[in-house]
Image 1 (cartoon, rainbow, N blue to C red):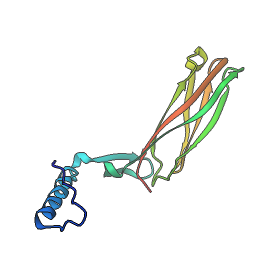
Image 2: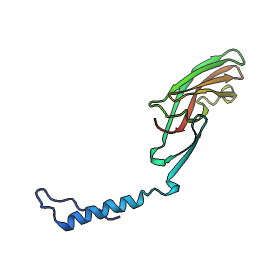
Image 3: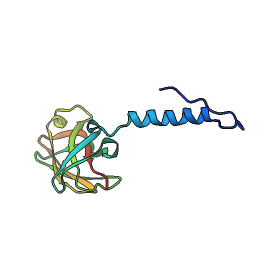
Image 4: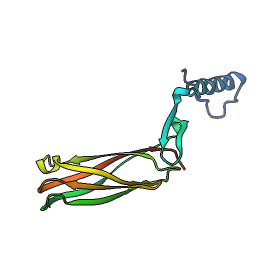
Length: 148
């Protein structure tokens, strides 16, 4: 797509210049069409299948620190953590959660994360430690849903 030259200060806008602007806007509109491949389908438990333009789908990525150079002394210890979304979704979004093992210890390699609850405004997880020892972990989240 060609770039439109910027007018000089005080330059009268003529038909040629306005034609170039209109042509560029039309090129952009053609590139951002409403074709079906520009839509995202989100299957929500509360709202069923929701189709929306990909540009209007909300995707939020985030994390919660769970342990910071902490020692787990009992096998099966659990910690519950909540991540509040910066803005609400219309329906509870689809959420994935993964654990990051920052120290690379065997203790950090034997951690499970369970998504306890997903609401329109937050996700709550339970992190279970299956070994004892020292570790630093966090839980990363990706939430995909329909904006409110």
